[in-house]
Length: 305
Ligand code: AZA
Image (cartoon, rainbow, N blue to C red; front, side, top):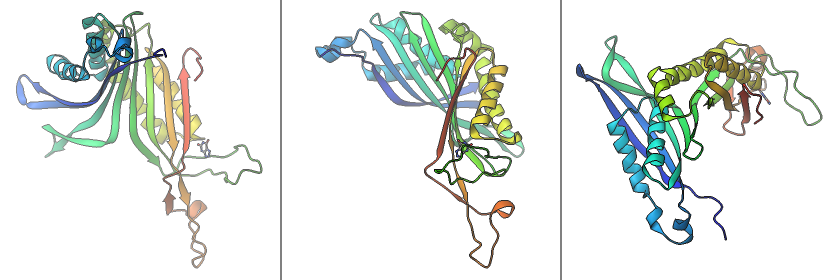
């Protein structure tokens, strides 16, 4: 039987890099990553003929990840992904594609005695910055998508859901005041015209474009979520996506995948008429499952999902 497709490499390569200020080595930054790097190319015979000569071992992929992290720039992760992918497609004649996915954990410097401490950090929950890059040697194209996930947010008012389709399957009541909560999972894809090679990624990284896009997306998500009286998860995620596209011209499309994490009203009227619904609602029951799940892709070029 023919081998329809093949790709391999190392996943869950974890590393932490410390960056020391040359003037003051006590002043440091840290970056902690989880890297997946998969290779494609003329590797079919390793599957079909047990020919290991074409295999760059997955251990070599891991060691290369550490070596490139030591020898060059890791901030921002878009640049590290591009360096790593570029290494494999340029070092090995028979490797024509590299797929690099990186998750960055959020270590934030904290204040001690009112001042940012030079080398102490707190991990901010489950939030991660992400990048996904495919370097294709044959087409010369870098597909680059950045992202943010695991940012859990909640607003206790300022969210509505009414005027939805109602039929004899509907029990949900309309509301003009509900709790809205989600785990933000968003990605933004860079335009090929703008970011298509290692040199372009280096230029953007130097100019701070990737960091600014991350900050803009995170800030707009938090601000629009807080400030608008949400008509629905759908409408709010669309508004955030449009704002990101407006603020980051080199981004082609913005995707969101958001759970709607329900907090149910609890009717306590059976207990001496205790009021806990409508405007009197104070105690809610968080639901673990099921949850709503809403996705969208907003694109400059009208492409469909
Ligand atoms: N979108 C919402 O914001 N809330 C909902 C939905 C929906 O599609 N369905 N039930 N509740």
